[in-house]
View (cartoon, rainbow, N blue to C red):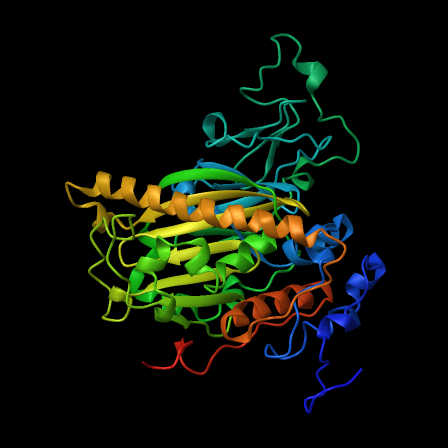
Length: 436
């Protein structure tokens, strides 16, 4: 094969591995050699990364159980006893607050016979802050301590039958050894994060410089206002990669393209496990809608007051922050070809201090639903195409797809067991188009 002066093949796809790839190669560096090239030379992740059940299973273990995953919102557990039940890598986790108001998280598994303790729709732990197993009535407090096994107050043991359930005579058993299995939990801004690793690094390591970049937004004070759920027939990475680039805007989003103009986009990313873009200035609404409708936050500096920030939090969460609202997509991979997406519209209380706030929320919800449905339709078409064995990978378009390249290499790192946080651009914002 002939090569040019950079030794890049004239047809780089011809050198990609033939499909299907042996699953044993998913943990070999050589499998990803074309994605590891500098972005101006790189090709995309192998197609099996988006449709192979074997790749999906490996990714669940090596990506989703080894780092911090955004699973919900701090406002949903705002008091002792409030709880949410979330799922990460197919594992159910209870997040709650103890009597002192401190966050706690546990695997949703009874220590007796592994019964699932709480259902997914539960928003409050049981009576007196107790988590009770529906099988044999073992009960735990919100610090995970085992309280009864059973013979305890409120256990509903029939009167007169207490001795039958008395475990004090059990040999080699101490209920103090059988508390709930803990999970690391933390917050940043309005997000709840959990980490399934046994000894996780601090959340701050993964977030990098994002807390500083968003300091003036006071995100910890924002609360969810509207929620929708979408069932997506596509791999979660396709959802993310679509979010990370604006190459598709003129053709997929004619309405969005009027308020987030193609030429007003910048790359906006520093060190951290994320990718970032910025639209500045944000254009005013058109007849098709837009991002106006609520009062902007008064604490923002001049740059933030006219900019929209678009961040993909590794591995699976989209975060959009505008001067007057935020939009979040929590993506839960269900299989290699299916994702359940929860879309949430959030605001700072200050932005709701207006008689027209409800109408503004309605308009924003309609606009984001339109944009999101357009995205999901095209993403599902990509999923259909990527499953065609004739497709062996695509070429990056370096100007617009650098965040995809950054993200795909984060995934590769985790698959290969490499613990690395990518660096960022030297400038806070990198203009993607030459000045007019």
